[in-house]
Amino acid sequence: MVRTYACQGGTGISMSESKSKTMAASVAVEPVDLAHLDRQTLGDRQLRSEVLTLFLNETALAGTTIEAADVHQRRQSAHRLVGSARAIGAFPLAEAAVGVERSPLSAPALARLSSRIDEVRTFILALS
Image 1 (cartoon, one colour):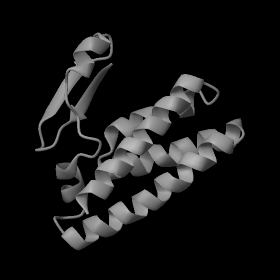
Image 2 (cartoon, one colour):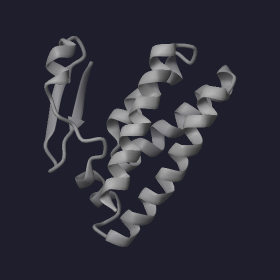
Image 3 (tube, helix red, strand yellow):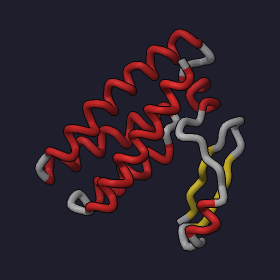
Image 4 (cartoon, helix red, strand yellow):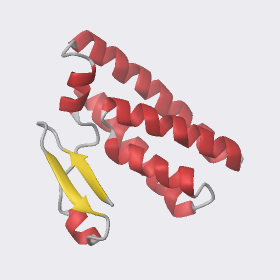
């Protein structure tokens, strides 16, 4: 399977999942692909700001909800987060949420998701 990671500025990097983590780690990927978000919001800065504010609220709720949820609710919350993260261009967060959706009892997957949520929230807040 080949995954394409979008980077700020609209360029994409394709990489086989079988590639080493070292190679993947050497590729700098912003927590939110702003070029993707701008396409989604048609370049409207006010709309972009509103979407990011909504996403901040969602991530705050998701972070606490997912950890406290039972397996079924955890999968549902992670699934919702996958969709909304992809919609705004938070692709690393979406991948972490997929990990929790697939393995809802995995402590490393939950830790990775929590870390990605923190990264995205810090990135968005820094844009203000």
